[in-house]
Amino acid sequence: MALVFTFGIAHATAIMVGNRIGAGEKEQAYQYAGRSLGFTMLTGMFIGSQIWLWSRISSGFSKFRQR
Image: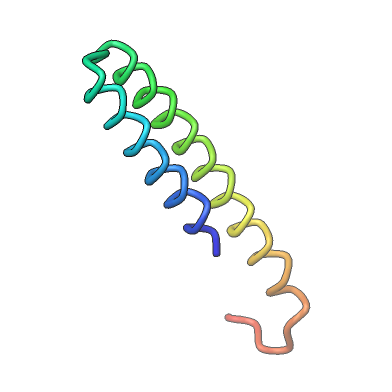
């Protein structure tokens, strides 16, 4: 589920960048791509940290702990 959001952003960015390139606005396409890259990286790090944190918390509720 965590990847669905970032894949959606990637597909939307591809469409937006493609539209800007088709319109001959390469500078705007670079801006869209850069913003999307930064946003997706931050979102990925946030989601990854949440998964890591919740896996640590939820493993404390289990009877089967690793030694």
